[in-house]
Amino acid sequence: MMSIRKSWLAGAVLLIAAAGWWLLRSDTNYVNLPPTATGPWVAFGDSLTEGFGATEGNNYPAVLGRKLGVTIRNLGKSGETTSDGLNRVEDVAALQPRVVLLCFGGNDALNQESRKQTFANLARIIDRLHQAGTFVVLIGIRSASLRDFNEEHFAKLAREKRVLYVPDLLQGLAFKPVYMSDTLHPNDAGYEKFAARLEKKLHPLLPKLRSGYEQRAVEAVAR
Image 1 (tube, rainbow, N blue to C red):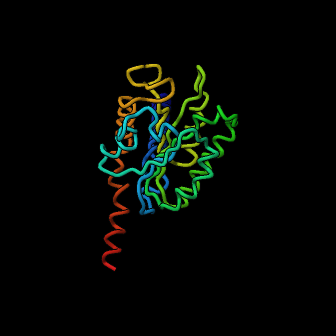
Image 2 (cartoon, rainbow, N blue to C red):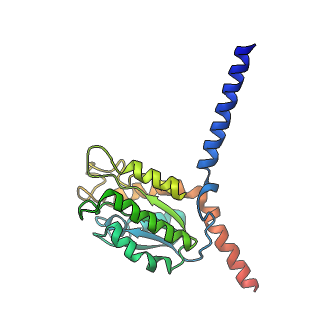
């Protein structure tokens, strides 16, 4: 009888733990879902966002926009670090963007920024966008080393800030010439593949990402 009771208690504990894990990972835990901002979708980052290596109209924001049926404004600038992004975040926040696809970090090591500073900058950028009512998608960039030292920091930041996280933009693309224009930047096929990963993550959230905006538009017309 004691053995059965212990088994039942162990099962109950596992069930409660699983339920808690599910709630923590539920999209209801994301900040600003639905977003309260009413502006455009924005892709904010460096050359990987700008689309270095892609032909006209085939950077990942353009491809993703076509897949989701939304217009995504591309605010990527080649060579920028998270510090540059922090310097530009007020201009982005001023747009009142509903959704921001945030992708910085690749250039930080080249500019001798510490990993601590990199993720502190990203945290401040996310905080400012959250203040604007924006739903943030954090896109990870692996470190330039055999072991990815960035992944645990990106994942931790995403949990702490309650944002949607997409690991390692170049996952499955790096070192594969069919997907890369050079050692760091995808070609059209690579950006297409990454956009498909993002679409898979974002498509289930589209009703909530759109619903808040559409409701406020109806209310504005009614007034």
